[in-house]
Amino acid sequence: MSANNSFHEYVKELFVGVGAVQIKRMFGGAGGYADGLMFLLLADDTIHIKVDEALKAELRAEGSGPFEWTPRSGPRAGETLDLGYWRLPDSALDDPEEAAIWGRRALAIAKARAKPKKIKTVRKAAPKDKAKR
Image (cartoon, rainbow, N blue to C red; front, side, top):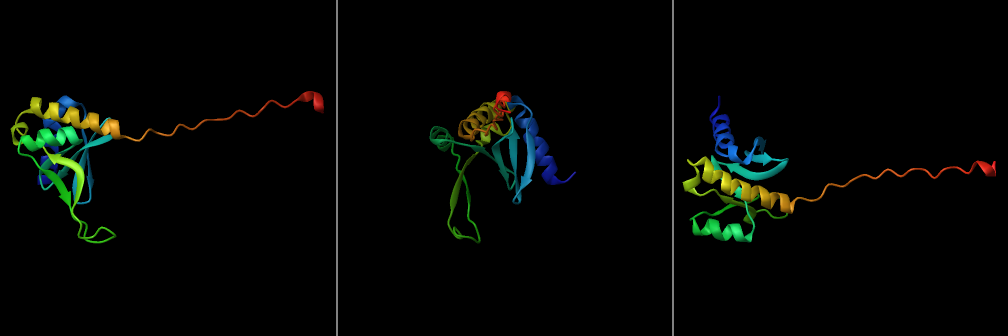
């Protein structure tokens, strides 16, 4: 098993209190998903959780910081971007109960920000008037 797979298994076990967590690789890192929504960002063996302004303030007080990314190409090349994920506090790294509390909050934020799925409506054809024939 590679070191990356080992880390992914650790993350799944750490967040077991959130529910079934799936890990999907992306862009050299990975995303952690529950209920079909990404609420974790994994990069360089570091766990980051989805945040809103209130959760950022709490994480800042815990000594955490944002995941920042600097694109090498494209219209925003060289610009440092905050992607809305902050590092999980160190105290939660060995405590599945604490990790689950942070994880459930991050998942709630992901759910609140999720775009509603479009529902296709099927129109029934108007009944043909048999009397006109």
